[in-house]
Length: 637
Ligand code: NAP
Image 1: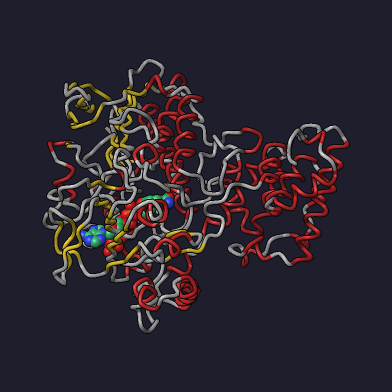
Image 2: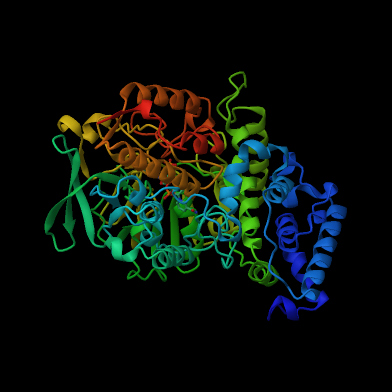
């Protein structure tokens, strides 16, 4: 039904496509396309208090009205020959954005304008170039990693005319999306919003696309941005050492063939990610199992699971995605669960975009951009208020505030409805407050898989991995053919296994002692000209997307390099007092959040018990703090 372009569409086709659209994003898209701001009617403004409701809580009447005026606008646009959008004046853009976000616009406006990136604008491109500020100074930057944040950093630095080399241990770009190939792997934030602001695409196949689509996106970005020639694949950084004499980094790499090489760089950017070094459980016998055993992030596609007795250890986000995919294929599936995950019901989690919506995204210029902005806005706070601890709240074991309790009740009702067997249900309802760990999305496939006759859930603690399988604390040995570790990543061991040596020979991992900290997640005292992306305390739990954080960090990085070059400084080193005060503030705030206060295992805490992963404040605050380095925060040499 939805073929051809807009000029050929009938009125009925337009009406049918609008039925499938996210109408709130379509209205400003059409107002922009047609220049008709009268489409943004006051009675159709979304209620800011209803953002997380479907269609932002529109009544049936509002929905009908919105669809009618959108269809009529499309018909008029078609009849006018589908002309391009008129240039949008700044006041008009403000009005368009304000329609979606309401009166919060003023503080947020610059961020939203950047996220929207209307008409191909790239507001976050560096507003300077090396040719202007330091044309004659030789200056080289090494970016470690060609995943989401490494590609982004290299692109921005190159836009500023900086000489960049990307050192990548793998044979392709994509980072976590390259390495995780387990069945069912997919993104868990709405896909249109999980993309770079400057490389939005209107043709995501699904609301939450699968790993191949994400990998394809990052590959295409690398190609289209011309980044591949900058990348040395199969090249792992083993050591970065700062030389106090010439204020440069010596970076030692190991190639796939085993040869080492050392090169000098003025700046090193770590873009190594947090969630890619597999964590195997700290159990006796790991490695002694005689059959095939592999981690979810190192999926062994040569192992045929058909008809086999398979054990999966762990029930985090990775396991919840892969278990439903393999449950029907294996003979028997034994799931070993230590802590049950809270599940966020997401009915469209596996769905393709409906045809009409895909067609509209392709036909209405910038509709995909408005849709992305709308997703961004709906998610910018998300359930964050429900993660704030109320110290007066009684019974802090199960929930930590009235809002947190409401979320707990809603999610519990969902689990109770999905798990009909009382014994299994008792295992699957988490005994800890929601939002203390990452809430896992599911469309019903998780309970369906666990309730299959060939699947069993084991909650007895695992005592050891044996040659034949898994022995639990009750003494039973569960004999299996294959063991799959869905046991997560060594997320707290930032920058491992690289050796990083700063000024005066200080070793980063000795300094951190397993408790990584940085200023803004980016810079570390005594490690001049080293910048981290997705560093300590830059992860979000239930709002936003990590790409947003990377864009903020990379903005700060490029501004820091401008500071170095424009001031003729060789290096910049974060002041210890600034760093320490910042981290005290982060720690204090994390203690007021459910993920910092609740007593439950999670990868958000490091071995010292500190939350080393999460950002406890608003997305806006991170943007504001990363506008540019304050020279007073640094020792400039
Ligand atoms: P994870 O959340 O750390 O889950 C690891 C699982 O293994 C947990 O259930 C953990 O139990 C269990 N486990 C660890 N050691 C164990 C032991 N000795 N005995 C029994 N069970 C053990 O790891 P993940 O599932 O790979 O996810 C990590 C993060 O990656 C996610 O939170 C998310 O941010 C990201 N991710 C995202 C997606 C997506 O976009 N959809 C998909 C996958 C991953 P405990 O809970 O008791 O520790």
